[in-house]
Length: 492
Image (cartoon, rainbow, N blue to C red):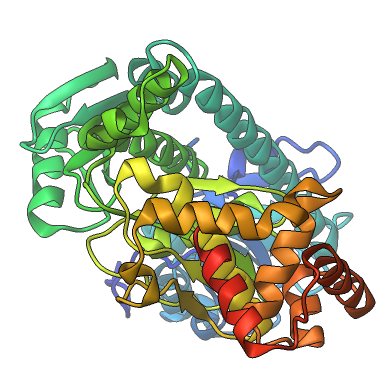
């Protein structure tokens, strides 16, 4: 028997669930019969295609059941190499099997075709006259749909079990046990040096799996895969960004959903090992516990890193505030210390460098402050944000340069401020009045911009300012009065 005209290649099969050829043959309503080729239970189909072309190679993707009635077969085909060439081209294209309809062109399957399929080890099915090619194709797609549904159910159940495992007291071993069970093999967590930290399941390819993990670390890649000498399927996944942990998975076979399941486990382990590696999660938890038990901010600040801090207040330009956007903002500012309120996001940022504008956000930034001064810095950031929103500026920083305030002792300045603003503080809604007065003065008496900054109607601003003027018994249009009030409000 001559060699194939084109050497067989691994078919580039489509990313769809495969179905066993045996499952199609088991359909009694089709009455298909395999008459040539190996009866391999591992033979799978990725689709069905009908063609009467003498050379079907250009029309196959790989993995199909090719159906033909033999219209293309010339009368003298049995005496030449026609069938050898025909079958060799199907094999070269990655065809999984050939189905031959015995009606209406041919009464039987040509013996030369049977011999060619035997020689090239291509399964040959006899399609009886009562079975249409469309019925065969429909049966293949039905089996594929069932396989797809079963695979989705398997992946979903695996995701749920992995998430439940991650919430247990021993999350890393629990996740590895679940993963090993789901893929029917072994799952291993390797440390930054490539040493095994934890593992679950069994495999005969421990050494090749460890070697693949070390190779992934050396290449700084995200994933890697290989096949062990005994046929075990190996995969490795880098966890996190630059932390040096690797998840290794070894399984006897590689099913379509295994990569998705392993990827979910990799994400969960990235979170778990990230907290363990950096220690930041434990430090933040410790700081929170100490604060709740009565420690002062200055005492817990060393756990968070940094001696000086910025307080940032932020509001999005358009969309509503949500936890995902708030976390993204914290990541952009370089801090996980994020507080999401109903209308503003507050971020505590180490004073390694001044915070920069973030797309889609209006930011108010305090002066850098020690932990003992965080409450004052919080008020500074709130005022800066109000000014940023009123002026439609991406970022406003609280001024920290020398000025009139530095010429007056702090005690005297605060005493003067308390006396000057006492009439407003003694009245009803003092907080709203003071905030309105502060914002109005900072915006040079603009009613509209003050209304925008405070999210109130401009008439409300006018009423509040008029109330402040009445309580103080002064003319707020006087520049000297405004200057003195602004100085007093700066002491708050």
